[in-house]
Length: 372
Ligand SMILES: Cc1cc2nc3c(=O)[nH]c(=O)nc-3n(C[C@H](O)[C@H](O)[C@H](O)COP(=O)(O)OP(=O)(O)OC[C@H]3O[C@@H](n4cnc5c(N)ncnc54)[C@H](O)[C@@H]3O)c2cc1C
Image (cartoon, rainbow, N blue to C red; front, top):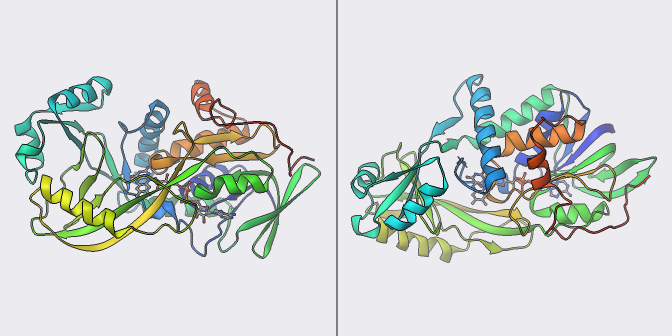
């Protein structure tokens, strides 16, 4: 099989890029697992929060929300829902948060209790509210990316791990399961495996470290208002959010892990249930289901996006950490622009901030498996 761009990885990164590229280029996407988005992309908290993360992430999130709002309008049911974010803290903590982010509005203690009456009043002084935060239907978003890519001609192959690589006349020949694919550009969208995939192509790893994080859906005696906000303390040590008549909770652990099928550590959830009992009156009665995923990022916490300077035709789209859903539409657009040579004027600062060659990633010259 011959194509312009081979994308390795069928999570949100690979699927969103296929969506942006397929209208103009021949795209093949290979996914190692038998189903798409088996790993981190189907294990998120499904939030899009413009006030979350460093400046490049906030910018990409704002753009992505606008794009997803537009595509949502064409779908049978909306896939974005307002889900304000309430950050609890001391008066000082809240003042600092609000001073540093124009999306946040300070709420008094009484206003906070009105928003989230399940809180125990003595456990916080004030809060900061972000009304621009959204909850997103991730399966619907992923299906939109996939179906639009396929409709535009992309070929999506599951059960096809990219493994052997050869180069010939400036093109890469890649074995992926029972397929052999030749491509001028190979995109590494392999999530927790991105450094390992890069090494196969002769690219120097960028220090992309997976960290496990868990989420549980629990039942409660006193379920909060289903339209209520997501709530977290200022130290981001946990969060909870109404989820239909249930509650979604996360201990926000960030524990280095090897790439793999991440599994829940029961103690993380047990301790969190106790903590939520201390700060709220919801009364958790049982765990309905729980899961763990891997948030993968380099030392400076920003995604790694762009062509590798040492390996012609090798393109990075990795290291999205805890922001891969909320930045996906805009990050894919930026990546597609870099691949087709058409980034928007004014995006230079983003391209530089995310460059695989930026300082701090341990970039160094290395020989290439894809060099002609
Ligand atoms: C608990 C939790 C909550 C989160 N909440 C949010 C949130 O609210 N909002 C947000 O924006 N983000 C959130 N995130 C982060 C977000 O989920 C990730 O940033 C995003 O899913 C990463 O997508 P990805 O496509 O890079 O990785 P993945 O979804 O892991 O996809 C990579 C794919 O590459 C495949 N692959 C690997 N090697 C090969 C190979 N050799 N050949 C073929 N395929 C290969 C893997 O099988 C995998 O399917 C959360 C993460 C976790 C764990």
